[in-house]
Amino acid sequence: MTLFSNWRKFLSQLVKMDSKPEWDALDILSKWFIATRSAVGTITIYSGMIGGLLAWQHNQAAGQPFDFLTWLILTLGLFIAHGTNNLINDYTDFTRGIDKDNYFRTQYGVHPLAQGFWSKTTHLWWFGISGALAFLSGVYALLYTQFAAPVVWLFAFGALILLFYTWPLKYIGIGELSIFLIWGPMMIGGVYYVLTRDWSWAVILASLPVGLNVVTINLGKHTDKGKEDRLKGVRTLPVLVGETAARTITMGAIVLSYLLTIYLVFIPRFFTPVMLLVLLAIPPARLAIQRLSQPRPSAPPAGYPIWPRWFSTVCFVHNRVFSNYFVLALLMDTAIRFFLPAVWR
Image 1 (cartoon, one colour):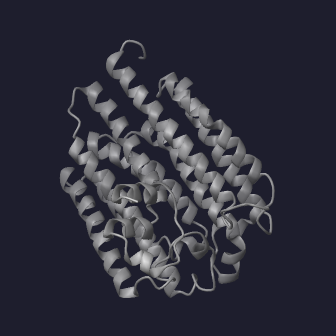
Image 2 (tube, one colour; image 1 turned 45 degrees about the horizontal axis):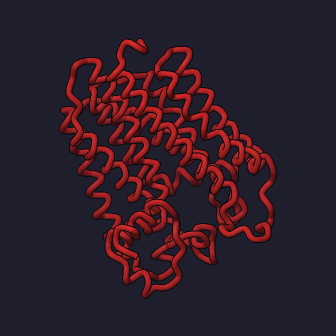
């Protein structure tokens, strides 16, 4: 495979790798993509794009320029911050003994520490460099907005979540809430604010379908590994409320993401009707709900290739499809406002 095809693969899917020589042969960027689980990190790119498009709409209507470079720095910084969080997540779980004994995490993807691909020192170096790049992006946002209060608060809150999501937040059942807030209101609303200097509660409302869809991935994953987490004292929300309630919450989040999008089209008319394109994601939503409506099997069905992922798989697929249509529809929504401003007022 070529270098670019490797990057495309590692950005689009989680990989399993058991050979250290195979790992050692990879280039630095490929290792970073795998170690940070960047295939899931692409959800951060979606949030950055959505915040940027909404900011572009605002600035266009106000006759203000759109700062593309600042948007790029913010979005890449958030993407790197997400990867940094995954690195500290793996380090914390490894040092606390969570990832031993063929734990859930090590069954479906590469864990460089648990598999002995690199040392704790090397892992901390990667965390430090990634964290420094993410930190610089945040500092840029602070300087760009002259330390505006909302940006200061978002920067501080984001840093705390990055450092303490794995422990103790995930251990006391509020990790899922943190994910919903970060990938919805904080990222989308934050990028929008930096680029427009306008705090918009309408934008925060518009970010909720995205946040709800992102959190279903973690709800699905934590439900999948509820038994393992319970035994190791990791009290995620599914562990605290039980599988049945967790499945119900996840299904509710999926349905609510559509209801909110429809509401934003027809009631406040925040979106143009083209945003109803997200309804094309209903087939994978239906598949996810069908699977979530039944208890998790104790063993993989015959021929099922990606066990132990069960609920998390259908939630991830639905999130990817929903996000693709949401961004595509928002691009069309933006084009309508730019080229046909009289059509939708």
